[in-house]
Length: 366
Ligand SMILES: *[C@@H]1O[C@H](CO)[C@@H](O)[C@H](O)[C@H]1NC(C)=O
Ligand SMILES: *[C@@H]1O[C@H](CO)[C@@H](O)[C@H](O)[C@H]1NC(C)=O
Ligand SMILES: *[C@@H]1O[C@H](CO)[C@@H](O)[C@H](O)[C@H]1NC(C)=O
Image 1 (cartoon, rainbow, N blue to C red):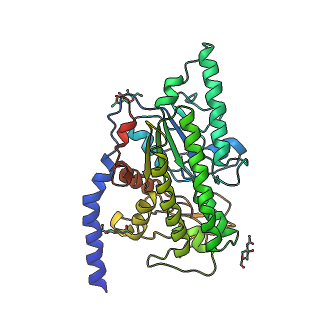
Image 2: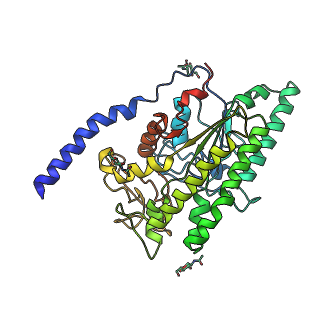
Image 3: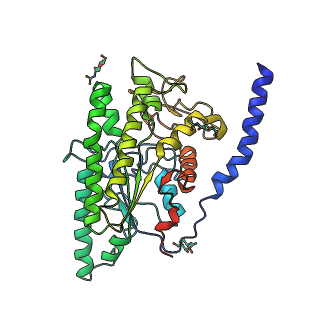
């Protein structure tokens, strides 16, 4: 009914008035000495690794906001990790694989690459390969520092650095794509968690003491999955229930794993961050945040309901993209827009989603 929708529109508007200033003022940093940051993961935090490592072309309109060029990020602008760096007054992370990394890696490096999973091991760029790349990086940097050939990062720098991990989504999503049953997918979870645990322990043995671990998002809400999956068990928000319940089980195991290793890794801060709840809230309550079609990609092909077609993905010939002014949560059917990432970052920084509750400023050396 017209009057009802008018009311709900003005309610949305009033809510926006209240919420928007909150979202857009929380990034001013008090951090005078930003930490060195190392990140491991998949496309959720890849700042150009796939493009640098495989020469894989990632075209505009990726990057059309903020950077105004394609940086190899799968989004229209900044990723969550970029906002987190900004909140510490740290520079954006260069991909480890980028030989022209502008920062020369004195602020850290990003080992995350699009499509990465934890298993199988020893394939580019699984988590254990990313960790091996880090070991190589560290050995080489210390060699240069000890030879007086550079002042990149010393032992203390590695010890005080922030180590971030965001991986696991592809392990689960790829298993479903290979037609594994729900039970088969669930059975894989302990070995995925084991890989993440191994990564944290290796970094700890190397001197790392500060860990920030993201859980996995509700990938059953991704337009890509919704467009590709045949028989669908949809929840009240239109997401694939079995996918999301696999994500939830994975997250419970990951949380338990963090609790289990804390007493073993003396002196380490291990923070578990509930990205699932942040993302699912954005989707479930999308209109409150000013987004209208939470399950539809801004950039893709096919129009409603999902605007996703595997043959015409964002940036490939024939794609369609929403107007720059419009508010979409999903950028390309898999990754989020800068507008969504910015809200996610403000929620991450709120401490309400991290256990133990931790101010991100904790990682700053003031
Ligand atoms: C942030 O870093 C810049 C230079 O990198 C510095 O000029 C500025 O003072 C820093 N901000 C704070 C709050 O320390
Ligand atoms: C999975 O099942 C669907 C439908 O039965 C089929 O079209 C598809 O080729 C299968 N995929 C794989 C990787 O086996
Ligand atoms: C939606 O917002 C309401 C009110 O803030 C909250 O109670 C609810 O948990 C949110 N839904 C999800 C799925 O997060």
